[in-house]
Amino acid sequence: MTRILALIDFSDYSKTLMSLALHWKKSLPAELWLLHQIPGAAPALADQSTRAEILQLEKDESVSKLKQICGSEELSNIRFVVSEWPLSQMIDECRIPDGLTLVLAGLKGTGLLRQVLLGSTINRVMEETDATILALPLGMPAALPSQLTVAVNPRFPLNVPALKELLKAFSGPLRKLEFISVVRSDDREDECAEYLQELGAEFEETKATWMLFKGEHVLAEIKSHMASQEGAFLCVQMGSRALTDKLFRRFIINELVYEGTTPLIVLPK
Image 1: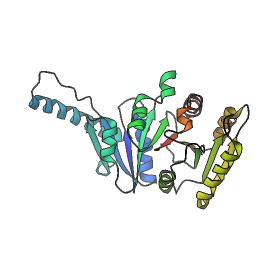
Image 2: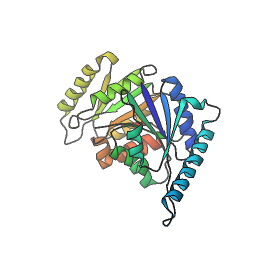
Image 3: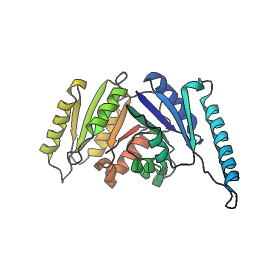
Image 4: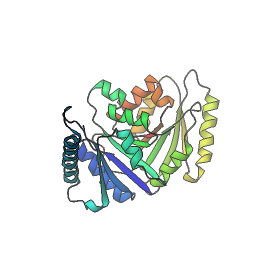
């Protein structure tokens, strides 16, 4: 079973994210839950009864907006979760006990700093939960991945169970799985190659391939490679070098995700 938790904030991007979530709901198939966080603000001097009434009004209005975004979709198959709780707490409460929970979050790409940080909402969710997160750039088509490109490094062991759970969900449309690694001056090439071979053997049933990138123009080569892979999603792991190293993080987020409109999947540690 797969459950999609789509984070809807009623911004201009919400309709695009909603279209993709509905498409994935039918194609995987999966349960679809729409999550929205309300401010939960009430006058400081209001009594408990008044605060509860104001809060309920906020929730009712938000649910009504969520239903409007769904358009003509059958609403009985969609859950609406509106709360003043932090998003990370909402996600933990809504996760499926036995199966994969995918958190869909939209990237608006407004401002360089916001791009480098992936947006405050996604950063908070990544840091405060161990869910699998899909950060989706504006303009990407409502399509499932036909390829997963997983960036790895032997110093940061891959969360193999999390990736295998993800592959189960995408088993229908997925045609290719590849692992890539970058050799820098402080890396041992033989160690990187050996780790890629081990992962290739671990995922032998998927006929996984692997590529090693090295040299002066390594980032440009990765960018060119990703641009040539139609339907590819980039997969990285929380806490890995891809997200903790400033150079790699800036390259992945600004040039691959935003400029290249490559969807980014972040696996938990």
